[in-house]
Image (cartoon, rainbow over all chains, first blue to last red; front, side, top):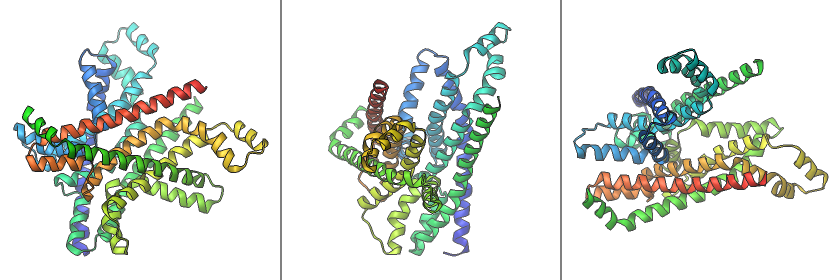
Length: 215
Length: 218
């Protein structure tokens, strides 16, 4: 393994991080909207969302990716490895995010909502000023946990041909007949990213417990 | 479209074989990971810093490494250290060792919040260490950790799908081979998705019944 190989794995790392970020940024608001549909109990739609979340939470990302990558072109939706990767990550993470948001919404104190109604706030205002700031705080540890899980499943993207950390490492291993060193470099790249997120989650939780103890 | 599902039906033996392999693989490694977790969890709580530190490094290390990469290392990496395993052995080993770390952390979490009194009463009654563990510590521990262990089992089923990359003939691999043989990607993979869903619903039903037992015992 030479310097060029290590550079190739680093390039893969950029792809991994970029795709994870895109997945997280799109998945967060979609998860929230799905949770709102269930919370508001929109007829039919709430049922569909519940089914979607249940199926998606049970589906391995590999299977989902293969489905998207091979089946969508059949019905005329062109798919590149990158678009299949983003779609798969967003579908997967939005289902999990939906559950995190939903549990925060369910535990939201009803009296505050009614108080906002009684001072004449409109629905949009109630949500933006009263509900959202509080559920964001409650959901944060769960959402960060979800992000670290998302990064841990990204190696699967290599299956449909995305050249991420893992695929770069596999390719170098196959060329040099020495698979162990590139895999160790790959681990050295993944572990700090995930560890940073796990530490962030613990730090948020500790801060919130400390804040509650003061209150 | 109906015709495609007809083809999947004609290949049902392959698919059911894959489903059975996924179920066997997940069950075996879930049980083994739980047993290993029971050994690592006390180590995590050990008062000797060397033991608790070593256990902590193992658990946190596994939690920071993606499973697919870990499976690659066990299957492709270990042979260069002179340890060559076939795909079943390395798949099972990877799935078990990886999830043992998560199980250990789950059990530790449930263990530290257990009330002290019954354990102290057990000690006062002269229970030996093993009987104390089996009769006093274990039952409430399993009941309270049940839902989280169930979630981890669903995770194990999903992780087992990754093993398709080391050519282990599990459910996703079966769907892939049906798709490549007949070129019916939608029917093949959506069937696999629903079979995974069914497996997870079975586990959720199991967890719910454990929850009812726990409720009844309170």
